[in-house]
Image (cartoon, rainbow, N blue to C red; front, side, top):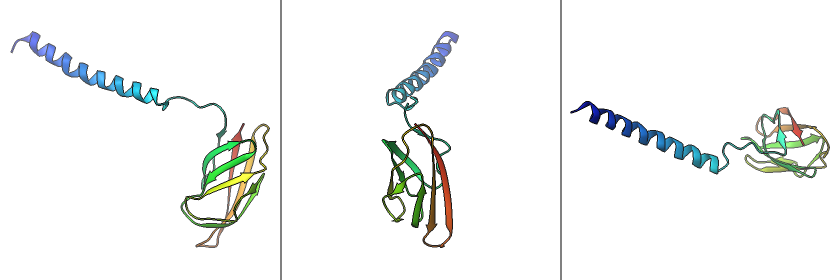
Length: 123
């Protein structure tokens, strides 16, 4: 095998690999994976609940892995008193100006222990 052929095979092999990486990165960019969304964010976010959305004084969060009861919110009003794992909880009456601190107090149904979870919503 000649040196020129060996070098050309090397360049072709790594050329195709680099081309595939570029196509994958371009596809991810096109899907918006690397875009920073403007608007509402949650930081620090809840440790037990998943932040879903916030608009016009209404906060939507998703319950964690355990059933909870006795839900109370400082800074808003929850739409439910109990929630099963994965249930969405809508909190209304949340302030619409500036950063908003939300504190959720709840009791885990299985253990009966009370917990508090806090987050800051940035408008």
